[in-house]
Length: 78
Image (cartoon, rainbow, N blue to C red; front, side, top):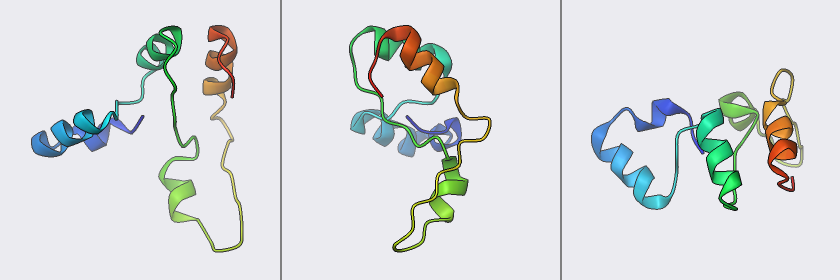
């Protein structure tokens, strides 16, 4: 799952869909989990990606815990 901004450019949008990426939304994520599909996301977003440092693990989860609630509701493992 990726930010909806990644799907703004037509050719790039088709490439992402072909590779299996989908825009992040509660409804789409719930549908994929209900269908038994695996969902992979980076809850820290771009802030977490840009803050990566070699030999260090930093996770940004403040106000980003809705995916945990959704996984529990759908019975999906984390």
